[in-house]
Length: 338
Image (tube, rainbow, N blue to C red; front, side, top):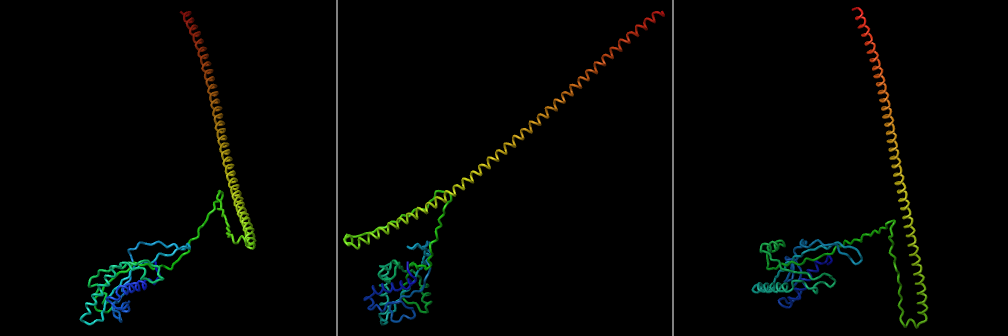
């Protein structure tokens, strides 16, 4: 983690490590190594040119940072820094190219042996860890484009990637408030806090009468404070128990009213069923009476028919007897005439 000054800190660290490793050979003075523009390098033989900054997209999504005081800080920005290091010797034309090649070789050796920038080359007030540095294998066309971007013709140079490095965020959020719930009608209680006081007295203080009196006064005050705290805690517990009792009594009343309503509904249903059964019995009795009336009527009809049949039989019998007498009389008359 680092502040927003990490970019300048990394440039200064690269300068420090080159001044440490390139002095006194192949360069005699440290003032000839520094950060500059390729077009305006002054007296610098070794010029360090920062030319690009990119976000590190390979880094995984980071979670917020939890600070010691409970606050949360947004995750840092991860960036990559790109540097070009060139050499421009002040020597005569006969030895200039050889000297530049010797200096470039030494720079490559330094960063090969130190693939991580040591902490001692970073500023003293920085809290960042060791930073990796590696050479970038660029084609000649890409190198020429970079030099053209600065408005210069190509010179012998090497290119390095530093990082990724982190820049801390200044967005800090307070922790969210925790909501405590209390369920009515349960045995949930507030945890009791135990307050303890401790006093330490050395043997030298015990011999002093003043310190003894002072200790006694403090102990009495502490005892009184403890008694007051216990009384407050007892009162709070009693209030909570009273509230729980009231809540439970209200719930019991509600349950009793509900049971009475259920019993009254069941009694009403039973009364309705009994009424329905009585109605059915009355209907059955009416049907029985109708059936008896029909049977009595049928018996009377049968009796009447029997009486009629008997009277008809008597009439027939009487008619038969009259006919026999007339026949006899007619037969006697005929015999007399003969």
